[in-house]
Structure formats: C-alpha cells, structure tokens
Length: 568
Ligand code: NOJ
Image (cartoon, rainbow, N blue to C red; front, side, top):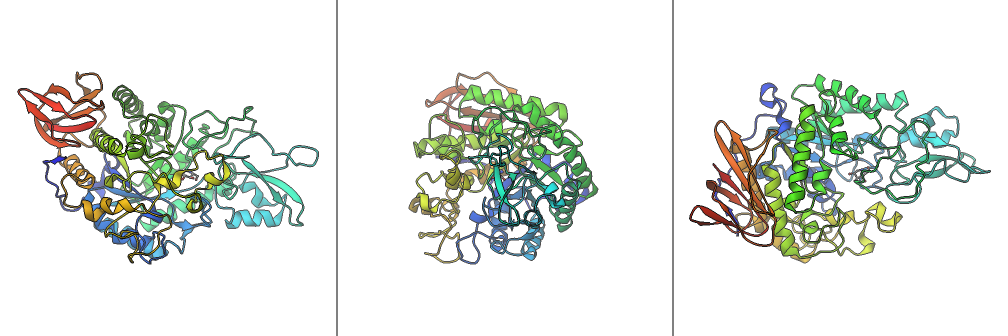
C-alpha cells in the first residue's frame, strides 16, 4: 500500500553529540523518540524492561533515524506511579539496572550519534524519599516539613483537608499524616497520588537540591531534561480554595492555583544558566499544561527552556480545518520567543493515536478499539503530516509499528494508580504502555529473552504480525514508512526546522502546504476525508502513507485518509 520511493538508508551517524559547532541548534529540528523503559526491552527476563535492554536496542533507534532518545524515569522508586515517584534522584532503580548501565547507555548513544534526554520530576518526590520520611518521623515543626506542603487540617480536630484541592488522579489532594506517637497529624499536599508528596519550591533547600541533581546528570553526559509537571512547582500564595469540585484531568488546561503560576519561570531561568554552562547545547523540555499556546510559549523564552510539548496539537482530531488552525496557532505563538514549535501525537499518558483516530473525536483518553483499519490508516497519515511540519517532533515508542492501545486489559493486570483512585478518570494509561513486540511468534515477542517468558502487561496475540521483525523489509509496513520518512526529512533541504509553511489552495478536508529552501521545495498533501480527492500534481512523489497517488493528466488522486510528500 505504501510507496516508499526514497532511499531507506540513513547517512552515517549524525555529528557526535556534544561536539561543539556540529551541535548548534540541534534541538530546533530534532526527532526525539520517547522510550518508556518498563516496556521497551527486557534484558534479564523478569518481565520488566530495563536499561541494558534499551542499550541493546540503540542500533534499532539509530537505523530508525531519530536524533535523540527521551527516557521516562528509571530512578530508584517504589513505582507507585511507574517511576514518576522518585525516592532517589541520583540512583537507578535495581529493576532497571545500575548507574553503570546508565553511563554505558549514554556513551553508546553518543557513539551512535544520538542524544539522551532524561526525565526530571521536580514537582513531587516519592513518599519514600529520605526527606519525606524524615519529615514524618520528626513530626510537626521539623525543618524537613518546610520542603513539602504540610498543613494543619480544618475542623474542630483538624479532620478536614486544609483546602478543597483535588488530586489529578482522583480524590482529595491532601492526605493526613500520623504524628510520631501514632495520633492523627498534619496533612500533606499531593497533586497526584498520596505516594507523591509535592515539594515546596519556596524552600531554598529544594531549589538547591534540584540544581545539584541537574549537574549530577549533566556531568553523566545527558543532553537534556524532560521536565515533568513543569507548570506545577509553584503554588498560589496561601494555597487558596478553588471553590468548585470539578475534577481535574491529566493534560487538563484549566486555570488552577497550583498550575502555570508566574513564579515557575524564575526556576527555569536559573536552570537555563546551568544548562548553558555545559558544552553541546543541553536542553530543557517542558511538560506544561497551560490554558493557551501563548502561555506555553512563556516556558521557552530565550532565557528559559528550549522546547515545550504541544499538547494542543496532540489533542486535535484528524480533521483538516482543526489541524490547520492548531498548526498556525502553534507556529505563530512560538515565533515571538524564537523557540521551535514541537509536534507530538502520542505518549505514555494518552491513548495511542492509532486508536484515537479509530474512534469519533473524543479527547485523549479513549477506551474502545474502534475501527482499527481506519485508525491505522489515519495514524500513518497523521504521522507523515507531523513529520513534514517545521520544528521538532516527538515519537512515542511503538507508534512506528502502528501499535494500537490495548483497550481490553483485564482489571487485575492494570497498574495505573489513577485507575484505582478515580471513577476510571484517565485511569486507562496502561493501554498505551504494553511492552513492544520485537520478534517471534510467541509472547513476549522478543521483549524479553525467552519465548513464553513474562511481560509486566500482557501483549495481544495479533502483535506477532506487528513486530519489528515482521515489518522490517516490508515496504508497506508502518515501520518502513517511518524509516523512509525520517530519512527523507533528514535529507530534503526544505524539511526539518524552520518556522513557516505556505498554505496552498485545496479542496475541503485537504491540507496542502509548501515549504521552500534555496536548494529545493517541498509540498505536503493530507487528505483527511473518507473519499479520494483530486488535486494539482505538484512535482515528484517522495512518499505516501497510503496507496500511491494516481497521476491523471496534470492532476493526482489522493487516497482517503492519506498524506503524501512531494519534491518540487
Ligand atoms: C506526567 C507524567 O507524564 C505522568 O505519567 C505522571 O503520572 C504525572 N506527570 C505525575 O508525575
């Protein structure tokens, strides 16, 4: 079905990471691949992915053609929220390996010409973090309590939470602690699970500690940080009530007294100075949910972070007018701050786009498999559209295989903490976290070393045909489509970075734009309709996500739900 007319080979390794001039502005057009370590590759057969597993698969990522790898957390953690509850920011959890493994992974990636971005979780720690444990042990009045948000409760006996904030995972955002003598004590704030107490960023000790953690990983050689809940660290003074009981959603963008407070920007200014002390342009990427794209742009002002995730784009359905609007808005809002626009379709918190687009528009948490064929067709088209846009693109592991969400996981295997805390709200993130299929006909399909061995979430039987092995060399496969797309993106002079697209006239439901460079131009057509559409033939076909467009006189027929790339 796909025409991969471009060379699939990738040139030799990209300029060595961190090598002065070669790295200038590398992040402005980088394709960054998210590895979710639990589910990428399991080297020791315990059913859980690990760092040696990731390391062994780096050549796959190099051949895929990505510029950098972002690893979700692999730090010491009780895993109450799959590692986003960190007990020790300078240690690797034994389930993922050792610091030596992390060091080897960073070195190998650099040798292969790829950069490594690690996750930093500064909004909250694990409740098993030494500071929090000491704060509990030492009781009210302990200096350690200043590093978190401990407060007396309301009500005659302090039996009510200090304010009306709710946890994003459901239930109150406060849990009552016990005094050292076992009596009910102060409450502590946790915007997420109770096992994730929020740091108090007014405490100088917290700010110092994170500057030191940044340096620790920069000294280890990482090329940047993805900053978890980057909009959450500073809370409105006095922790005022919200006054309503509307439950907050993950990736929600309502204005809240604990999100997107102006004070966070001071933190990023101080971090930027640290990043800039190191050679090779080390970057910060904000996971910031803000009410508008313009507010997101504040995080990437020249003296703050380098990139911010474009969740408005991720939340847009496969529909031409809506896509055009969000593309324009995204490019326009980043221009004044001179930051690259980023694009993302999937990550470990949302339903995979192959499943979102298999269903009617309905947000980022979808629980039904929908029309799988339609979903895959649109997902391939959407990915090709995204990779043609100016700026930096984020891929989530497995999207290059066209993986859908697993929507029928039995409740007993689920681990997403929000599944257990809320009335199901956003609690279905396990569906996009199922371990990758690499090879073979029997689960875990090469995820672990032994056929028939375990995987922490079960993989569907039909994933044998979606494995890397089964798709490699098949020109119609989604994997080969991604490989070709990344190779063309790297080679075509008009693709990659930039800030402009020139929209072309196109029939309703079709997006058409041109990108120009001194060495050649490029046209992208995306037909988001269910019907074939005739348009003017722009030049020479480079790549198509669906059936090869039929040339008919000076016109071409674009297949339904397809994107094609043209050299002009
Ligand atoms: C955002 C992360 O992506 C998500 O997985 C996590 O649950 C929350 N932050 C809390 O750390």
